[in-house]
Image (cartoon, rainbow, N blue to C red; front, side, top):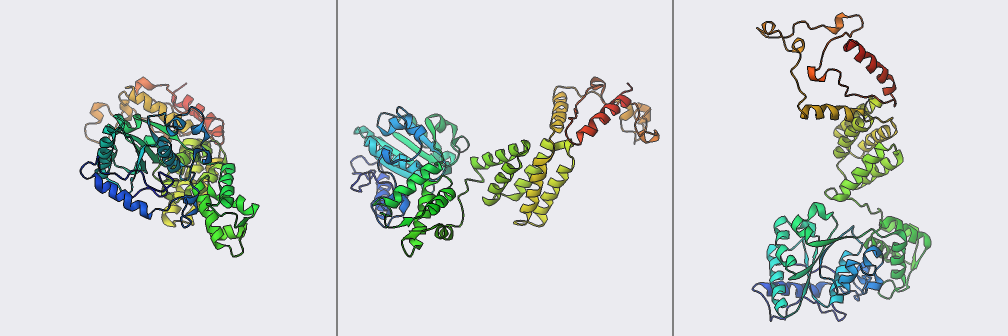
Length: 469
């Protein structure tokens, strides 16, 4: 079992959460021993050999940068940190936004015993052992904060093991997750906790974090000169992630031979910007949603941006191709029938050629769909028809349209009186096609966008002939 790196409970470095043995449940001492052993390997914020991001972890609430929407006077998180709140919380947000820091500050400010579990290594046994330990402490009037990182990686069974302890306030649960709790946390636990969403840091806030790290004795202690251009570049590639920005700064400083950090050195030390994307999490859904809406809204530049984010993050190109084929019919439809052909061709390129070359075909399809005239008539048409079918409007097929390719069909009146359109000079003639209940019902309503400007008058004329008006 691993204690989360960088969490220390007291300035002297003693890890709160190591049992004194007076109230240990059977098996709980092993948990405490694990914490104690882990603590010896974990660098504290004062350890000069620790990563810069660990050394610069805020020690007080005043040092926290960002998240002011959660830390204002009277806010739930502020009350918890100040020791006046009692609700368990789920801290939800991207990496590097302060989830672990806030959990650590909460335990220090409240003076409660602090236990930490990582969902990557802890199981039901470890969870129950910590809860038993917390229950015995409670009998002595001592409360426990249980911090669980990456809680979305807990199975349903592991999450269910927390329910009674959270509901009965045996522990004050502080759980951190980078994924939307609505997707990754069981409903009973979700309903017993406050969900507090942390935001990515702004560029100004990232700059504040970096500036402090350059001069602070815990950081670079003023030993390096970082140019404005280098600082700007680190801010850009950080993607709102404070930890990533500090890691980039540290890597660049370590590569400096003369104590100067320029933009070229940063580019050589950090080759790729952060991409906020998780193929199985809410970022996956958020980015694809933005991609779809950009296509629908005819913003080709925004659509290309989200396409690039998906490609850079390693999204399955087949998934992108499937969405493009859907959008070609859903958003463009008959306003430009060739959009579907382009999307299908892009999907074939993905299958036959593969990445990275296939990204050009995906880009071409994206541009085609985004810039094409739009029509929702395909969606509305099938939607209206399906609604009538679900409502029971599915009468008998007219006898003259029924199958006549079997013995006895004629005796039943099937296929009798059918008029073959190709026998007519115009290729169309008057004849009933829908069931009696739906005669005269219009499902397809062409717009005056793109190709449908030509289709609209033709549909009107065809309906008039076929219906004998």
